[in-house]
Every structure is written in structure tokens, then in C-alpha cells.
Image 1 (tube, rainbow, N blue to C red):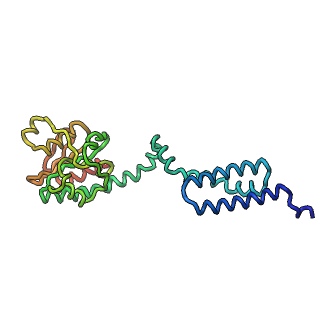
Image 2: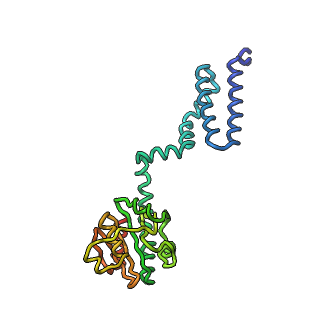
Image 3: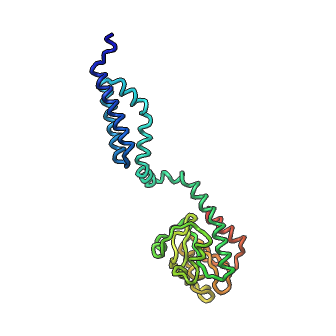
Length: 248
């Protein structure tokens, strides 16, 4: 019959379990990481005390959920962990597949926009960033950071738009800036032949590995500048290949 008489440890064990359940219910009603963090700290302390005092019921229950503590910490501090990993580029390979998919998907929308502007004879200057970053030029323009769509590009280069002057810069399949001023080429052969838009397209490729696509406002002709050399009257099939290669 002595087995049915609870000892002091058993009483403490039961009280702590009841208190633990009560605190868990309170945490469910609350919100925010601060309360969750306090709850996790409390559980750690309680687990330590249960081991020291040999409280079998408490330690048994907490030990059963021990594998979930790390998961709870990861969920709680997910933004901080992501930020820390980003500093060491640990997450770069994880996100590579998603970036490739986004870069490859912009080709069709960009081709449609260029085709429409060529047909309507809307002047445009589009720069596709490759390996070398164009941060200095981007900071001098209007930051957008938007997905490439036909309507957005047509809106930007609409002659009535305040953003139509200058170039748009594409990075990783997204428009990162508009109204970007580019350095003009001083190549005498080009200066005699082309206007400001074409000279800007050539100029940016003389100073970087970027690719510039120019749509003539007078003729609707499409030109592509790479490595300081401009190619005029580019066919859409060739333009598609250039954009696809740039997005890899």
C-alpha cells in the first residue's frame, strides 16, 4: 500500500507538470518571439532541474520532445539564421535553381516588349547586367526592382513617361532600375553615325561586360552592343539567343 502514497518528489513532479501545461496554454494565447523564447528557456531550466532532482515524470516527458527543441529554435530565429547564412553565401547554392528559373522566364516577356516597341518605333535602351555589377549607375537612376512584363516596359519607355529617358537595367531577370544614365562612347566612328541612345548603349559595354539592346526611335531597328561593338538590324531569333545566353 505504500506504493499508492505519493512521495515528496512525486508531488513536485505533478505540480511542475501542471505548471508546465498551464504555461504552454498561456503561450498559445500569446504572440511574438519574445514569449516563445522565454518559454524555451523555461523548458531548458526545467529539464535541467528534473535531471538533477531525478523527477522521472518531468524528465521523461521533456526528453520525449527534446528532438523538437532545435526545430523550435530554427523556426523562431529563422530570419536571423537566414541573414547570418547569407553573409557567408551558404544559401547561394540553395537559391541558385530558383534564380535560374526566374532569369530564364524573363526572355519571352522581354522579347515581346522589344518587338512591340520596334513595331511602334518607341525608342528604348535596355541593359542586361552579367558578371560585373553596375551598382554605381543603378544608384544614379530610379530604383524599381520589379518583374519584367510587357506592360511595365512599354509604360517606362512611353514618351510621356518621366522614366523614358535613359536606360533600364536588368539583373537576375528583374528590372532593378530605370532612367539610368550611361557613359557615352567616344569612338569616333560611332560618334559620327549614331545618336545619344546608341552611343550610351555602346559606352556601357566598353566599360563592362553588360549587354545593351537599343531600339531606334526613327526606324524601329533593333541593335545590340557587346564589348564596345554594336550590331545593327538584329533579327528576333538572334536577339532571343543573345538574351538567353545572357540569362545563364
